[in-house]
Image (cartoon, rainbow, N blue to C red; front, top):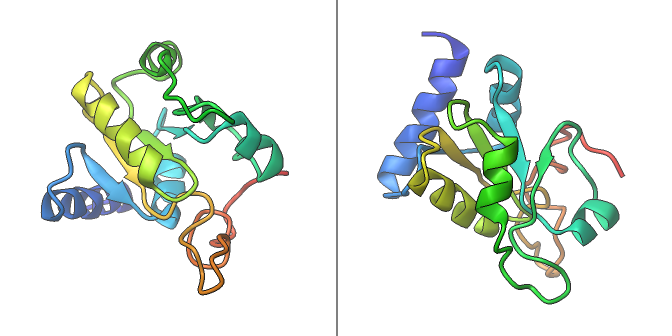
Length: 149
């Protein structure tokens, strides 16, 4: 079994164990590997424009807001924008700040034909530390994966 199959099997096992409504759940490191190994796989960053500008961006990511800022209203065009930018036949890996919005996005995508829909656990910034700050416990950035200011 190749490395890609191994990672996706592990992600599917997590989804099954947690009864998730999409294909699987990936750690940031696993998601990065999938992007390297699966032709056409897309990372969909569902954070807000403010987060992309002030916190950081992931090179090559498809950026579609799940909620707008500062109001926090759900983006009514999310599914239409996803259809325009991400083929339903390729793995779609959803990421937000901590994994909550991306869970919802992966769920919506799976319900609308993206059979290879994955949530990236920990998100871009990870969980809060003891002081209540993000960026120190888990996440894409903490793992040293590619990102820009």
